[in-house]
Image 1 (cartoon, rainbow, N blue to C red):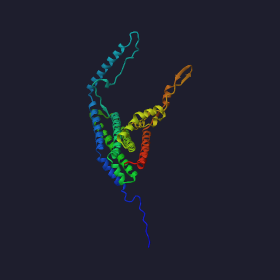
Image 2 (image 1 turned 90 degrees about the horizontal axis):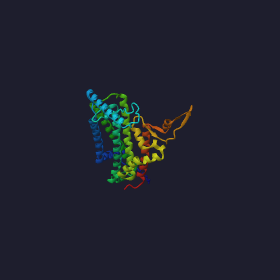
Image 3 (image 1 turned 45 degrees about the vertical axis):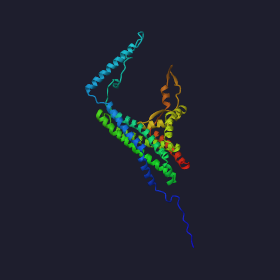
Image 4 (image 1 turned 135 degrees about the vertical axis):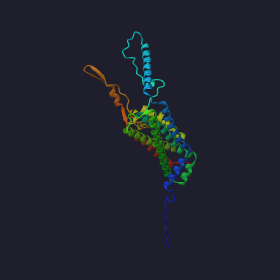
Length: 347
């Protein structure tokens, strides 16, 4: 008589990962708060485009000549006031009070919406709104799981918590990428419409369009990373308001304190990295304190090299460097929160 022994795999009876992903897709799509946030983003793009439509105009040559005449008269008034303010005993140099003002200084003047600059600045504005939405979506998605106690049922059905955590993170990142595409493409269409109605496309060609699309692509990836950061913090503190508050305090206060104490960290701060990502070619950040200007004596005359000292204290932060920095922040927080999600009691 022979006895056959059978070994039971720990993965036996486990649901396929695709089913867990499908359940998370249904869950995030059914969340009313997330649908409202997406709707708020779309409405924000519409309102911003409508505001630009009202604040710009394509004036005729006659109207433009009248506006320029108003500007000259306004400059003359400022020049006369400047001359009257000088003491009688002071000799005013020629041209000292010749002040040139932009045409926008004249009340009621509306300038055309230039697509070459307006589309890029609008993409950055929409990106800022998207970052705030990604912060709220990432926090409310994980926070809602704890608040509704659904997370307890999920880990009971799927004991391997890392699969649940990974599924939620992938679905959230995909949703935020889709949200970013919707917002940025909607702005591209509405911004082009504004330029065609009350503006122009002067100086806007294929190269400018390629640069704009590249900036928008970086912003879309940034939204997914910010959402992952908010998601991870919420998984740690189990509360949406707490995680969003921690992140906002860190961005608005914590990083400023860190930059003032350890100024060399400026090139690695989250806020500066986000600014670099949303820019065309990066930003300049100060990474060391100003040294006293060096004074050199050449042929009996002294020269101050203050501009050279200024340049040595600045570092260029490129968009790719900023994107890599935000990726590191997200990876560290995702790894830490994923480890805590598996080890500690979540009930």
